[in-house]
Image (tube, rainbow, N blue to C red; front, top):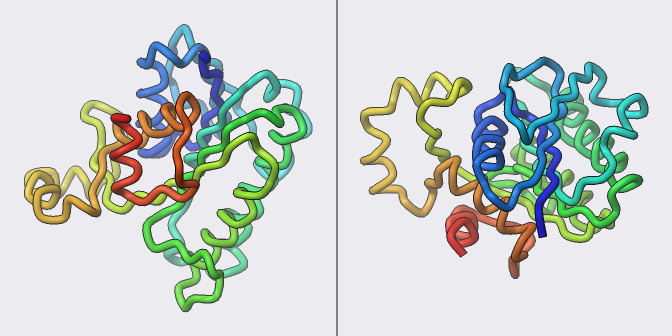
Length: 220
């Protein structure tokens, strides 16, 4: 089964890394990116849709049909945001996009980048973890053919890409040591991308993927 995938968040580190793996994978036939600003990336497999209003996808709904996967890599930090702001950007935006995709691609596999420490009970003390948990809990039973929640912790970037976070550039010399000491909490962007691709091709026995699951699925 060839993959026809929609990717969000490609102007961020995770989305760009996942896009890179998709463009270079033989089982990925085509990629549609939905973004607020152009990524500047050009490839024969790639079509880019620049769309400003991520809370209303009616104008581009027709362009979203005909796909069998979505890798949702769009996200933001909770630093400096109150609960209402973070809920709007995280839960409301994601659920709006998912609802739109369900209308046109009910047979789709939906992969969502959440985070290690996400609170599935939605009752914990950490605001971002509750809202991420709320988002996961909405997506899992939403009606997609399959849905997988990816919970990476420390992500090692792919060399040569444009959107590597500054902190990774600063701490690059010590990252190999961190990977050695905290290997259960570290995965690479390549592993995330490959795991998402394999979740569509092969599936996985868990719907919530922690770091070790991501690494296992990447090379399954």
